[in-house]
Image (cartoon, rainbow, N blue to C red; front, top):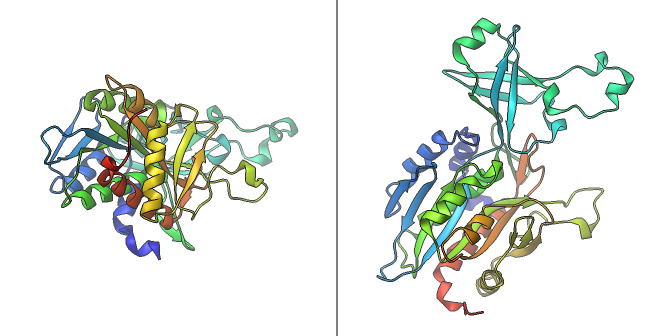
Amino acid sequence: MSLEKIDLPLLKVISETSGAPGFEKKVRHLLIDTLKDIVDEFYVDNMGNLITIKKSNKPTAKKFMLAAHMDEIGFMVKHIDDNGYIRFQTLGGFDPKTLTSLRVKVHGKKDLLGVMGCKPIHSMSAAERSKVVTNEEYFIDCGLSKEEVEKHVKVGDSITRWQELEMVGDLINGKSLDDRVCVYALVEIMKTLKDKEVPVDVYGVFTVQEEVGLRGAQVAAHGVSPDYGIALDVTVANDIPSLAPQDYVTSMGKGASIKHFDGGTICDRRMVAHLESVSERNEITSQPEVLPFGGTDTANIQRMPKNGSIAGAISIPMRYLHQTTEMAHPTDVVAMIDLVVNAVLEIEKNDWNY
């Protein structure tokens, strides 16, 4: 059972730690505490990206950047009305229908629990009932007066969804598994590489502000300037009722997905071939991914280094992506860790010429 290979308490705390785009401090400090005695070096750049390094013994070693983003989709306080209701700015992409009755935490001087509210259906006109409620029609109810709310919260404070991570059947279920499940995977990758001889300098990079435009990876990839790169992220698992098999992007439980294409990147064919051969040699379950929309840090890892990098991506299939709760299969998480570790160790087995 793949779940036995997963440090569920660590994944739980990574998932449940708040970190909206631009507010990743708590996640960053958690990761520093977790990895400071594992990696050879680490630093935080001016953007807030955490860069951890496992050094090769080769004096002229090339650089291999692995990246997972720390931020989660969230909100920012933009107004507190006379009745204490909070209006917000979204940070990242939301499907408005998933906000109804969503429990959130408002992170001010003190965290306040709140609930997303909107006009109840009983009070809607027939025309209103036929329309999708927009983000602008929602508000947050903390159950407190304006005076009490303002003791703890001000405009500009962050807000995140609140939910505990738990198992639902055989599957991992919780908030912000995009991309915290891959943050967890990258932690485990750096732990696994700790006592191994690596042929490249491995940069385990935990990026910021991915959900609002891949911003952290732009700075990190420019600063590290890797020769090779892999983004670790989640992707759509469409293996649900009412969708035809040809419309699946990936299926859960069939291994980590090796990305070929998304809305921001055509993955380097050399990296795709390397990952496929590593998967086959080591009997690591994997599946192909062609995502017709969206994007990941891969785009900036590929383009921002001075000479570009040979970049690709590995994804964990996920149901209910960017919804109230997200779901992942332990088998796919373990496959990602195994595939990346072996991709690093076997980097010299591939022919990198065009």
